[in-house]
Image (cartoon, rainbow over all chains, first blue to last red; front, side):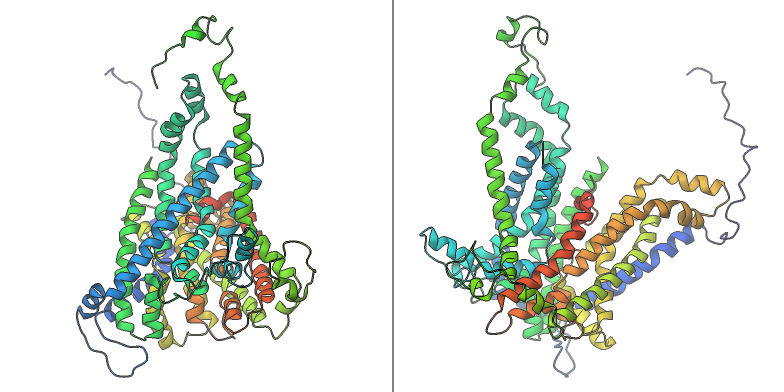
Length: 313
Length: 304
């Protein structure tokens, strides 16, 4: 603790500049409010208010088509839904879909990313090509595949016949329909995982590999102890993001199978749609929706927490 | 792995790194067959991933008879542009869909950008109470299942006479792109040093003028990239479109194209041509913003 003789430069010479002549009334606080308020207002009007309305409706037996006044029935809708065998079945279908689709996408996406990251030339072009499916509209993807999986004219069956494997009714067989939806979703979203995994892989500093080569670490050890730990946090973000999206899947099912055959591909989202727009049981559908929102909020919490951790590093 | 032991065979060859061949080099030369295997695997995966797109392109250019050929014709089909002509015929429902899509996607993107960019700047520059919570809250509105949100929105729009109007779709798309715009733009604003603004303020500009004259011009590339993504998202959106605007006059291209498979017979050539026409602008736009894809597809949350 030496005695410091340096004094801070005198502040007397630095008078306040003649700033903000015209907009003096706009203090920083007001400006921030003015800039943020319109955005928040739109979100409140079209995201939060509708959700609150759905919450209100979920406690009533309101129907959008009947003109009779609705009754307040407390938690009737919720208890009905949570004890309904139909809902349980949709939940299981959704769970099977989410878990298998995400597992496949992660495996494939990471593999492709790893293979691309090991190439030195043509990396950019390869990445761009692989990303095409992800940028397409679910409508386009659904229609592409509906045609390809068509039992009569579909190219998939045509290939299988040529190979002597026999045909299959991809979208109308109860055992295969869900698998088809999983395959199509995997086709579309594998590039997403690949893209993010690739971002992680290319960010691994080279000197770590060089160091490990000097140490003569085996390929597997290198992968296990250098690549994976560094890519994992980013990959987890991608997986959680996909999980949320897969959980709310609707459009692919709507176009590919319409929930059928029977109810074999009905996800929770699709069941909500049927309850609301085909059964006109608006109150019940709202309760159903609120339950889904709760699941999404829990998943989103995980996502945001990891994201926060990643950003703070 | 931190322990560094010199292998005996290297030690016997002299001082490591001077006389002996570095092990790394020998290591790299060897796995030639493995490299070929990797390239082959990558090629197979690329073909599998791209085949559906190529197949749809082929279908859109094939003669009607070749489309329904069994077994499917990979090569040797007759080329025709009839399906694309049919897409652009004046009485085709898809044409109106494209017009509406351009209007809806364009306007909603402009609204989202006008509201989102200033908000992102404010979130980046100012001390705002519970800033992080607010930002996370904004992002989480984007995660709501569309089918759930559409129920109350439908009732609300019915009371406001916004059902089957392009205005209704524009509003909901603006709201749906706003969280993305704010998050994505906040990243771009963070990259522009606040010192430029402070310097401008020392020169006599107010904070607002400093934003307008100094920061905003620097943000233009970022704004362009963000707007392109918002455009792609609105262009591709299906759930809100199909429930809130189903009449032919207001509906956008995705429900219009999906409507082509409603009947008893499906004209796959027309479907393929419409889908290709619809997808082409997206692919072009995505190619333009390929540098920002990671941030774009994670709603601005992950930046590299």
